[in-house]
Image (cartoon, rainbow, N blue to C red; front, side, top):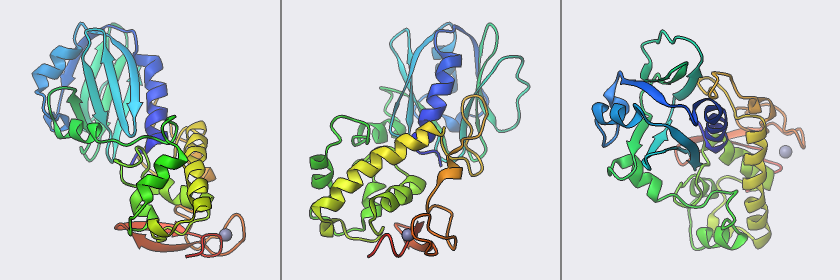
Length: 273
Ligand SMILES: [Zn+2]
C-alpha cells in the first residue's frame, strides 16, 4: 500500500503533468472508485476545468480546481495515477481517463480499493481525511505532541504509530523502518517508553520518511509514480521484508513477528524488548 513517501512521489510527478492544463474530456469507466459522487458529477467537475495545484495530507492527494472545488483521492492498495503524452488505449484496470488537448492522465487500480471523493459531499473518504493527525514534517509534530499521543496507552508502539488519527502517513513498511531507526522494539508498550526513546522516535519518523521521499518511494509490486516508473527506496530498507537476513548495524538475523495483525520485522539485538 502506498504510504506517505509514495503518495508524495506521485504528487510531485503528477503535478508537473496535470497542473495548469485545461481538461477537454473525462470518462469514469468504473463508478466503484467513486465515494459520495456520481460518475456524471465527477466528469462534469473535470471538463472545462483546470487543476491549479495538487496537494497531499497523509496518504491523501488533493486536487484543487480553479473553480474552487477540491477532489480527494486515496490510492489504498493498488491505485496508480499516471500521466500520458499521446493517445491512451487503456486497459481493463483503468477506471478514469482525463484528457487535455494533448495528453492527459488515467487512474488505474487492479484491486479497486482506491477512492475519489469531492470535498463537501460527505463520503467515507472525507471522514477519514478530516480525522488525520499531524504528519512528521509538520511544524506541530513536536516531541510534546508525540509524548502526549503515547501517554497512558498500553498498546504496542507500532500499532499506535500506524493510527492515522495520531500520525498521518505511516503504514507497515515505514513503521518497521522508523522503529528500527529509533532502536525501539515494535511490541514495546507506549506507556513504557522513556523520554529519550520518544525523542528518537519523533526524529526517526521525520528522517525515515524524508529519505524515502528522496528515493522516490518503495516499490515491491504495484507502486508507480506519475510517469509509471518504480521507486528506489526498496534498495535502502533496513528491516522490512528482510527476515532472516543480517541486520545492517550488528549482523544479527532480522526476525519477524505479528503486531496489529501486520507482519513486523525487527532486529532482536538493536531493538530490545
Ligand atoms: Zn541489529
